Length: 122
Image 1 (cartoon, rainbow, N blue to C red):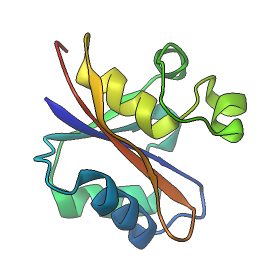
Image 2 (cartoon, rainbow, N blue to C red):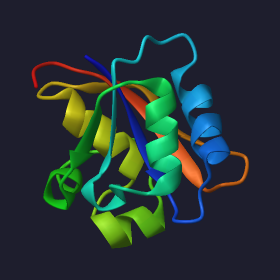
Image 3 (cartoon, helix red, strand yellow):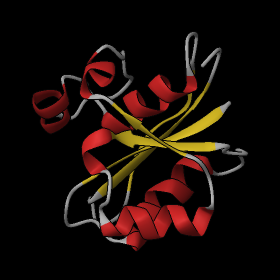
């Protein structure tokens, strides 16, 4: 399974999410989305995922903290215990043996990130 992991601030818009997603997923057939469980219900996320019509997986904080990422944000490390929420979400949702096919990409407004992983088992 190919999963796009998304991280974003509370000020993110649908355009923020779209920009990061488009940058990270170019040329990849994404089958699902993933983001931290605490982001559930955010208006921009709801609108964005409704538009894409892909399954959305909410990842528990404990599952994010165990993921090894290629990039590192100090804010992500402090809040979630991982270097990149987008990378960790994608890896966790893609399953055992997953690997990143696109590291964290950042929207121009710096409010959203996206990374892509291809999985082993879920």
